Length: 523
Image 1 (cartoon, rainbow, N blue to C red):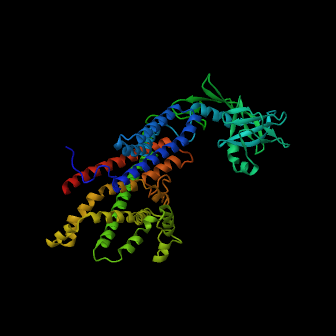
Image 2: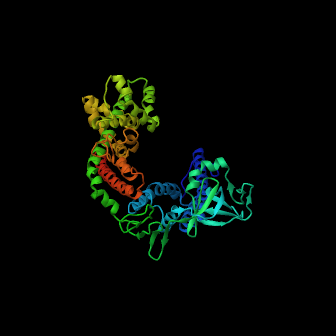
Image 3: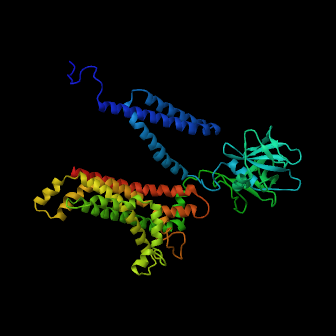
């Protein structure tokens, strides 16, 4: 027998159900619109690159998304799928990509495959020789890619040069100056536009058999000969000027001569665990690792403890029932949180300046705050305290609202002093609610790159080593090791990032385990 209801048959759905239905329809339209926009953005480049596996994956995901949101079934999946996709795209994929990069030599000079390295070596060694063909050069653009529009100085025939090679360009028009003024399918750059892209024009090399076409200024180009050429027979590059042979080394991704010297351009290869062993065995790196790690942990712990203590103290003061003007105080207290952190860090750096800094001038001191290890570390912790306590103030204020006042009133009636009531009632309940946020704050401060980079840049540095500073965190130390030499070593940086990830994950896992025990006690 059906259950009786207060609503007569045929009655229109209530306002609440209509609101839910409207929200669901809007969500469906938004998801489908975003899916279509992503397809329009992603598909053309994948087709141009002929990346069929990636195109197939995108097509399958898009089709599954459209099916999911066009069918009335699978209601739970409609809410879970978007979050899962974003989780994979912005969390899982970056972690996997970082780990896989750590096993390669990916970086400057090792960004492409072997054939790309050979092309770069040959085109980079092109020299103009007597009698080499010359062209009137006009810079052009097609689909955002820079090309050379080349008019032969003798025959006036026009060719188009791209990084892939040179090909005829029928239908192009040449002006009285001998330069191309119109090219079907291409946009001819005017003189100011070409001048703005002068660096790109000078770097572009159009490969030809035995050499390449390179620009000589903005209006002329020449077809030169390559001083270095590759031979597949010996798998080596020969320098025509010296006769030296550089043989391919599959382990390092370089062309190496008999003396062990290598050409600058290489290719990406799998180097196994060499990046990880370098971190542990290279004395210039491992010798400082423990000291940097210790300061890193101290910095993160003091930042979290300091911001939490100050934020909680202010929140408790404003939470008192006799407190007046709390709205004004709260607005004033969250101002540091509302300001752009990078701008505030730069301002604090200038305030700590020994000669004209505001702190020394106000206090009448002559302290070199950023010049000695102890004062520099105190300075960055103070700056981080100022930037971070408003966040702790906000979350603590929210947590205090959830604690019933009856509990503290009961403790007061039982004769417990305010400090005992706080320590036995309020603080444990706050920690149960806020411990996950404290752990995430620790992880954030453990990798707080901006706080160090923009305030002290890792300094001060000792005379013994300019590679590591007194305030360096592991993340800033990694940045200097991988990118401070003038060339990017992404594979090595990824290996150190894996170490940092493992350290933070281990500390966070232990902290979350203790949090669960604490929740069981106060459940």
